[in-house]
Amino acid sequence: MEIKPIGYINTPFPTKFGLPRQSGLCKSIKATLVFEPEYRVKEALHGLERYSHVWIIWGFSENTGKEFSPTVRPPRLGGNARMGVFATRSSFRPNFLALSLLKLDAIEKTCDKGHVLHLSGADMMNGTPVYDIKPYLPHIDSVNDATGGFSTEIEDYTKNVIIPKELEEKIPKDLTLCLKEALSQDPRPSYIEDSERIFGFEFDSYEVKFKVNGKDLYVVSIEER
Image 1 (spheres, rainbow, N blue to C red):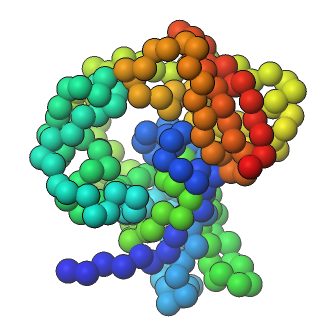
Image 2 (cartoon, rainbow, N blue to C red):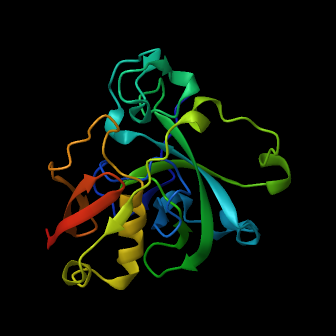
Image 3 (cartoon, one colour):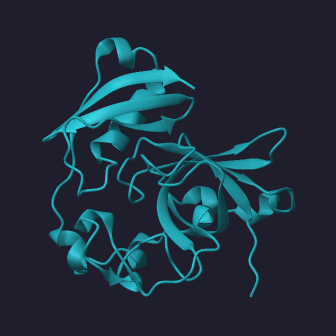
């Protein structure tokens, strides 16, 4: 079976570092889904506006071409413990497919790109290929007695994000909350605890640098790229 993208996602994250580890963790992060020309057919979206959330099936496009491994090292387990790839949401998979649950904020009709989906809670890089969309059905997809495996045993890594006022004023207010939510999840590998080490990542049109000391994450610089 051959599959091809029906569209591409636009987000503030041009690289993997800094991305939320799962969809919905950072609800303020906005994304748009722009369809490929052949799928810009309004009839294909008829009825979708009645749903609040959608499943997005997309591809780990940065990992294509890498060999399959039956086990992976989840970063949140310290980078040393191995788990079966099918017991994780690792990006190193046989077919490099991913699944995210996003909030459908709006469907906008544009002049040059057809109907565009506005979404929130994204965990994808800018330019990520999307292969399918399915509506979220709360009466079926939500399971009250489900168990979360080893993911429920993982330490709480959330951080208190501290951005000096003079740095916060460098970015638009609508991006500030997105940045704080993304940083609060602590993008670093969990086995790194060097309080003096400075990390950096690209966010929208900015380069953000930070360091972590205990439960506090300090932003040390924000510069335009």
